[in-house]
Length: 507
Image (cartoon, rainbow, N blue to C red; front, side, top):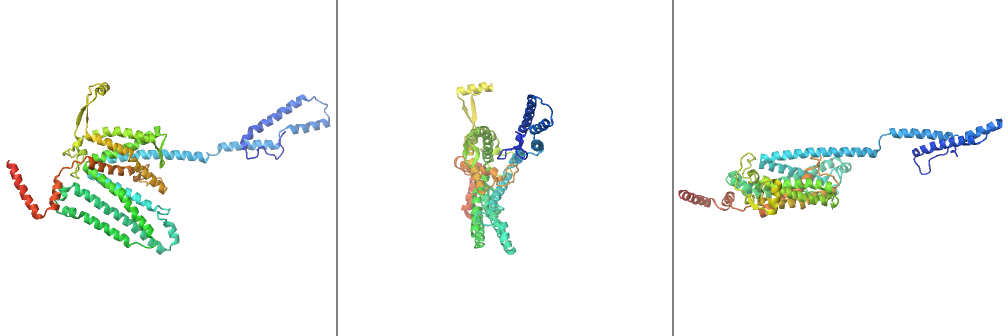
């Protein structure tokens, strides 16, 4: 039967009325067909006023009701409006997310090549510029880490109210006092940073440039009293910190004091050992840094292509497949990469002169680990390689440095990534995505150098324990003479040396 006037064709529960358009049209067509069939099946009767009236009533009963026609018309209009309506918010968000992702990829790629180009340029300019670069990065990373202690708009680690809440609670004079305390805390944190670097860089200068420091009257005074001066500067800062302690603010002040010293331990001291690597020979800085970069790149590529098994909960995107794949590729990369750069004296010679650069013709007594060795290949392997190379290949050349590079590659692949995991946990503890926005597409400098600090520290310790050639140098002798002998003893030594040299020349 046709629907009654005022009734609804939409079932209870809010069924979509657009879905009933075809049903309504089908019902109307079915009613029309039924009327035709009924009129053809009923025999004609004499036309009388009574029969004509009954026929009109029957015809009006079989036609679609006004409500049905109105419903069909409205449904068609709604369909047209739905087609012309803008895309849902979810689809729009997907489009925006896709555009944002590709913009980040473009920015990341562009600034990656810019950083590589700038880094290569500084590498060729000499160790002095590399040391300045390390100091600059050290400063910016320290700024990012210490800035986390007081994140704007959030309570600090010590549950201290943020600046907006304090402005509402305090009067103008108290707000000014609070601003002065914040400025003093920031100044003191940078003071400790400066004192720490004065001590560490001074130690490196005195150790690696004895032949210059101990023959100049000004630097000689600096070398003799450097540690005492550094200690007294630190004590002055400590006294200033204690003198500014105030009740009601103690938790915040001691929290910041501990935060600053932990930051110095993790950042400034690690960068000091990186500087020592540069002064021992640029290759001890360049190869470890490159191995970490190589491992990071191929861990991403292998994880994207083969990754299935999560590696660690702190970083859900890290996979076991990416971890192992990056290890194997980094080991192969280390052997050939180290073999290439060990050919250049500029890379392997210690930095005895801060004015040296890649074009200054550096010469030195090469560390034995860079001496070339030759070994015969097994017959089967020699046959295979000769067939591939289409020339006789019966031996291969190697150095001990290449084997040391394999050890560093293993550390860069197995241990250094945990510096990145540590940084990931750090960011999750503070509910932040990146440490900063210093590098577009990459985040902060800490996000890019979190693994380099632990790698630089390992490289220096490994070099000092396993590789350093502990021979007596002129600088070491000068240091002993000046610091251990009196002036009269030094004069006597000078006379003995003159006599010995005359004898040696005459002989």
